[in-house]
Length: 291
Image (cartoon, rainbow, N blue to C red; front, side):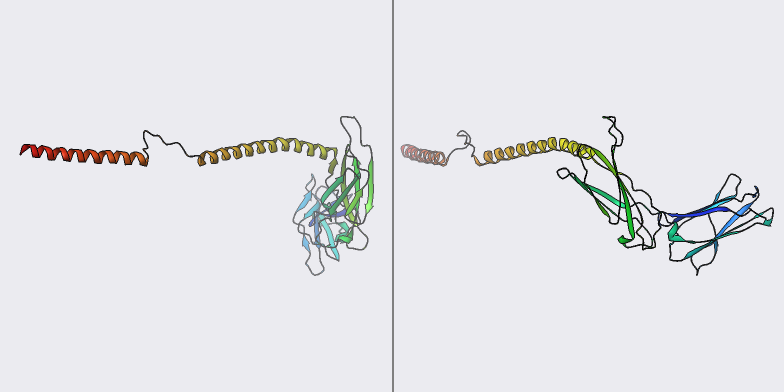
């Protein structure tokens, strides 16, 4: 029957290997109409049916989710047919070059390095992740730098800089340390590779400027007391070790009442020897008198 086939069939590949395909039901489709999606990603592969349908409130299939999709340099074939009341309805067929429907991931590892004296900021990043493109030269980028609003001064975005570049770095020459900025980047095809011509996803905004300086100042405020405490502890340990070493090298005075000198031992021995001789002489004299 006329106008029972699906309409507005679209597919999008995202996060490198995931794909969603969606469609609208036919204008004359009833609630008991059901659709089925079949596809063949490569010429040498078999046609397979969708395993994860998206349904509307009536339970009709209006889309499909795919995982582990590989982008290759050829067309993928899609077929959506269906039935209504046990009877077949009009089918829909489409060929799609998969790289053309890819939504590129954001550029990776966005880094900002600013020099206050020259009022310049160097911004650089890495290409987005893909499953089929390895050359950095295949991408061009759009970068947007905004002077963020200042809540204390009740000001909105003061300025906005946008540029299209074909390298993975950018030099921003209007930097002021008193202001706060944010930078975001997205990628697209440079014109000579198998990359989608549609712009990819924006990177997470990277903030720099006044907030960065405030963070550095706070860090220094915490670091200075810590260094002072460490130096105080080191000084105390050094003084303690010095006194301990000095006290160990000074000899303790001998107690004359408990530690007699060698001369005292000699005098005591001579006195004892004289006493024994006196006793022996006395004994002899006593024996002689007894006779």
